Image (cartoon, rainbow, N blue to C red; front, side, top):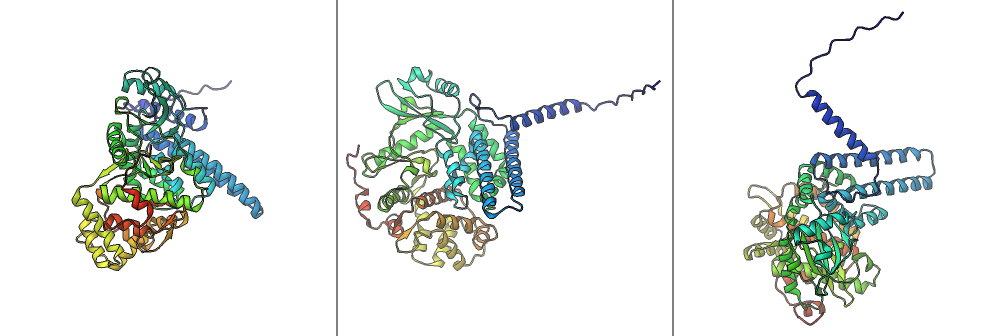
Length: 494
């Protein structure tokens, strides 16, 4: 006969202990389930906005990618060089697909950073960049039911009642909202941008997860320390929540460039726009990647238009958009370029504009001492910071590699990537010097705009004397090209 074991006396539980274990157990269960059960679609859901959940998704993504790459490397042991390349290449593509799926679903700041990675850095393999490039215009969309809810809440009725026609499938889906083609009751073709529900909370959650985002991006970029640049990207996205602010900025640019021979800005439809819905004139044309195979002279022309738009916005008008990337250009059949997305716009005061021009002049005049003085005035070099003028000049000369000298220069992705790598690597000379410099709020969006424009020109491999074009805005010199001579004219280009 077996002896029955005497039950142990129950230990008293601390108050709330069991409740907390049960809560953590439930969270762990659902986290694991979400990680390994791939649903066919996340449609119908708001953007995940809980900081812990977003951090967990990034961690799971990183673990899954690392595990997959480690397994692939183990499978290459003892294999031929050709077989190693094949196995690792497939693993990289699977890892990129995982990153693409996760960041595309998460939206917000992490998706914005992936958009930057897809075209600003040349160190990523070409197949990886091609996959990430889909995030610029074709991220996983939200369900049409959510679109209907937002439109009805903002415009007083569902899309079918407010518009004559409204396409269910989005034309483009990005980090803040997605765009649907529609037709107004009076027959105008329009593009309707609808904000993702919960995306504002998601971006604020990303601010609390900044360290995790930085480490994820560092892995994607091959170890670059992009902290200074990415802090600005994450922090500034909160400016884009209110589409009414974007509508006002977009309409300013539309008024400025109406009838322009080279630039088109979509007109805003104010009666069909609100805080979370922005309705604009629909503009037809080709996308950025559709024009990269054009002849050199065509790409040079496109590059000059894009650069002149940036240069004029900064140094002439003192108002510029801070989000240049390939998804924000439409190449019209008549040769004009349509510029999109004015959610993040910086307006300079007249005194700020002059202070901003001064370092550019010192750089073009090849004057290190004047550059040091003007960057101190700008707040980049603190009054108590001891910086060698020649080292500072070399730093800025490397950043402005395309415009500092009076010569024809052809942008390439490699040249832009090498500049960014030197600037962001913490152990490089540029990286060490940058740690001594400050980035005033006035310059945060300015630097982002310039670097983004350089990356776009690198993909176009555009060639021109960018120094001479820059001098037109910085020194108020006469136009140096035929496009420049016609830039200020207003003709009926509709």
